[in-house]
Image (cartoon, rainbow, N blue to C red; front, top):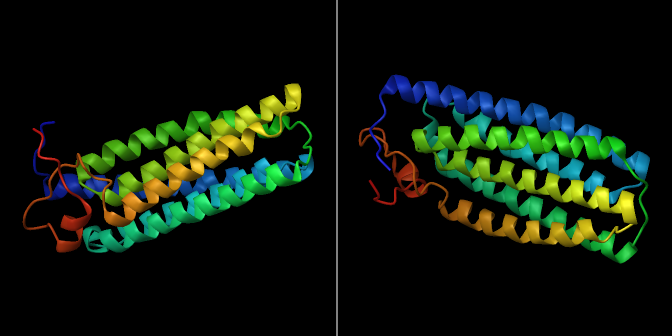
Length: 228
């Protein structure tokens, strides 16, 4: 991939874009979480309630990005922000695992939830758009945290798909076990991504930062792979 050094003006534009993407993510996921928990309580659906709590984990990841890019020098907060996002991955994995195991062990029957199905479909439309915008911005900016946050959003997209399949199978055939089984796979992926974020491995194809702006923390967190 051909890359060039960013001008200060372009870097400022990308930093503002990262901030607004984080605001959009936090706002959508807050609304998503509230709707999911309300719908889950109405339908006695542990999957929907768990999905709502997962949305709040995504809000925490977006909040880390907001904290970072509200700084005058976002690069100075890169390493700590990346570690905080890694923690959000681990929290997500822990909750999904707990909820999946609980669903499998209790075997409780949930009612069909048209609201939950509609919410899952909406998330499958909105989340990929956010992922694409974050990845393009993160790669050009050279930010490991923006890319790690995009992966967090992608995992929530996968969870939306898992939720949709589970709700549809439960509504059509009463297969309530399908959702927690697939969710356990997502939890494993979340742990893997969390470890990579902790080690700073989410920026293999970022544009290189100018040498004058490249801090030691960001140099560790955001590497290029040497491909032109």
